[in-house]
Length: 122
Image (tube, rainbow, N blue to C red; front, side, top):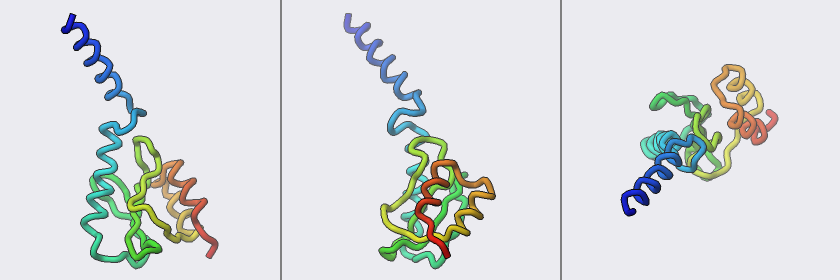
């Protein structure tokens, strides 16, 4: 009896872990860890202008934030949520820059939509 309950519970956990849409999937954790590591390593130097960097196989946009902190955005995450930013905060990007990023096919759909809504006219 105990064995069957244990196996049933194990099967439920395994099915949930394999679901790419499950909260905190392995892919999601990996993407957040890339953002966290990049933010931590560059924390001491404020970024002057937006720049795309490739870190851990991901393209990340780093830009100055309104609170004198760098803001990091993963351009094309493969796991939900499909917009990942660290830390929370406001930033400023021109519409021209967002358009340029989108034309290079570097930006995922959701990230492109968010960035285009936040971008300003120049």
